[in-house]
Length: 335
Image (cartoon, rainbow, N blue to C red; front, side):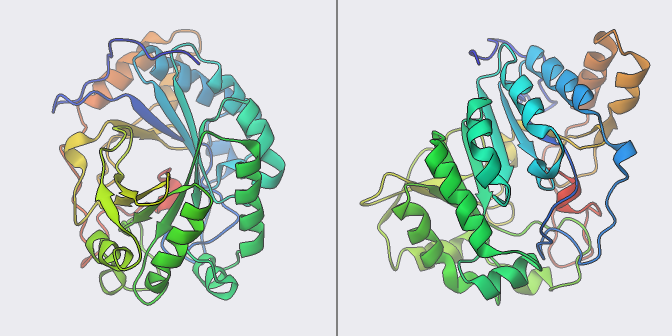
């Protein structure tokens, strides 16, 4: 991978440069996390998904237009057949400087080494509890030991950056924030605590009642650690804190309590080829028809992307108290 282009074609109406693309390769997952989806989910027919070749083509076009960072997401991206070969091809794109992956770690024991060889430099791993029974309740069917083996495999593979992501809910796991921090910090892993995002109708809990703000989590953590705010990396929404005695950091992703829309530098591509301009809005453009109507000509696709950027809103309209603004679930949104 090489340095990103010095100029970008991707600038939204607010003047924000879009240099970060999150690509969902599937809406399917081998877990059923309570904040991500309903217990009984209908997944997309495979025929509706972009092919691996189409995903690679779009990744190449976006990089040529100025994107320097790509994150592969799902659902659980590693359940898609031959996805590692796709990731390797994306990692070879001239101009791409950072290739990341978000995963639940269940597939990492067999895929960590190939992913590292494919050029993945950063891995985000979802982990919401360290208690096997509670982990199974939150994921509805998950085996904590399998995830822990996946985390160990990622560490052994030697990824330069590994981060734990934890969605914190009152009445579910808010009493584990210190334990989760110790787990990550002792392994030299960053950890980010995430406020639940109201995407899709769920049947497990009332989001307003379960909401746990980043400020509440920070207050808990300060009982056990000495924390100092530090500059973020600029590539994502986490606000990081340095932790006295550790190299790793603690971060907070706070779409409600500390809105980060003003610095948004990203768009999302769903597994069906829908370009989402905002996580918390429905502004989007379908790119799959353009891909298939112009298999040998990238310019119409590039123009479709340029036109789409004009729709990117200033920010989201998340509302925990009412009916979800966004009816699509997180697994269909992509990371």
